[in-house]
Length: 126
Image (cartoon, rainbow, N blue to C red):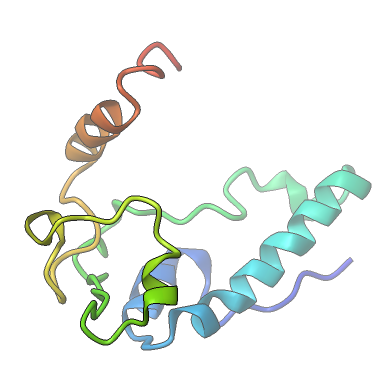
């Protein structure tokens, strides 16, 4: 069973993503890859490709975290229909500016934010 090809290996996913302007198109090959991996896992558990425990892992804090920037929505140009797709709109003060870093600077900062976001409900999870 062959996996679909991807434009860049997983360890180069963040730099690849940073060079893209159309995110939906850019990540489609990765969605296809993941779908095939899931199919393989469900139907062919003994396949050798599944021996790699990091096969679909993207190393977020491996030196590329500052390359991914926010592509902010242009609220003035969005239609009402587009705006209604978002359940919890952010206030102007809570929005990250276009071009700011999309990834926090450290794993420690991520853990702090995640604990706040999840209201500590997963704090005892190993």
